[in-house]
Picture 1: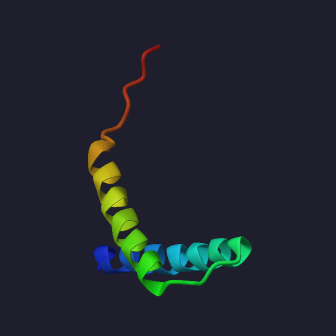
Picture 2: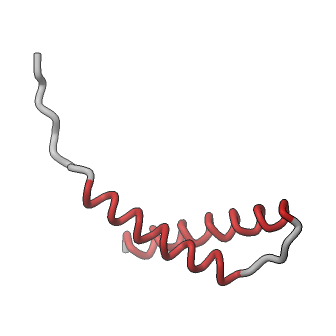
Length: 61
C-alpha cells in the first residue's frame, strides 16, 4: 500500500509542479511529462529510503 500512496502523492505533486512551471513559462501543459517525472520521483524516493540506514544511533558520550 505504501507504494501506491507514494506514487499517488508524487504524481499529484509533480503534475501540479509541471502545470505551474509550464504556465509561468507560457508553454503548453503536457500531462505525459508530469507522469514520467512522477515515476522518476517515486523510484528516487524508494532508492533514497533503502540507502539511508534505519538503525538507532549510539550515544558517543
